[in-house]
Length: 265
Ligand code: LHQ
Image (tube, rainbow, N blue to C red; front, side, top):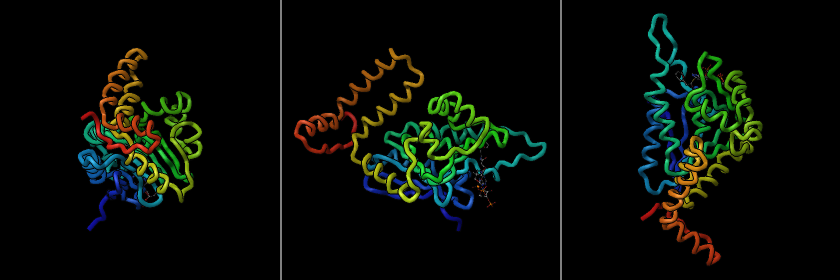
């Protein structure tokens, strides 16, 4: 029997999801994409899950779409947009809307859709030996999975164009210094650092973090005026959560807060 293309490990308050086709650098095939979609749904419906770590098995994080499944045949009518419409775009939307923080632990090369799935995570940690490649130009495609939206926002127009048009690998350290990712860490520390974040988020005011994620996403298209109104509305919602009361009480009592993670009751 084939090995499962995705592994899910439960920890106290968070899950580790591992892309598991190491012989293909965890390139996405249909089975893996379906399993990833289901794993996101399961994590969302588990109230005790307050963070997710996404990583890869073996020496790569993810090499993007498995190209062996997409070899164009002569005379065949091709619609490369259909795969985005049906699978990748809903997956990116779901990933970004998760109601808890998502940490990418990029253990090795992240290319094509694999790179952009990582960059859609809330916090991106990368092993120092990892590389980020907008590989699309090498096969005559454009950056997808939100790449053309994310890149200029994360690293600015000039670097976004360089990355998209040259498709050269970017080291983890360069990615950190450009602001593409949160941090590069020593290879041997990657998973422990990611798990530290998982454990931290497992005790965080999750509902407020979900609202902060939503506000930051909407800020990309809002005017300052609209964003001030949105902050008012979301702050009102955060203020009705039990965690707000607990956070302030704990501060006044000089103790560590015990957050439930729940939203307004
Ligand atoms: C692979 C792959 C791979 C299959 C490595 N597929 N086998 C959207 C819409 C519609 C259609 C298409 O796709 C998309 C979204 C996309 O993601 S497009 C972009 C697809 N990805 C790429 O173009 C990246 C292709 N891979 C590479 O350029 C290299 O493998 C990188 C730079 C990632 C890593 O290079 P190396 O470290 O030198 O490893 P390698 O090339 O030797 O790869 C190891 C094995 O993995 C090798 O198999 P083999 O049997 O020879 O050991 C590769 O063929 C296989 N592999 N990526 N995407």
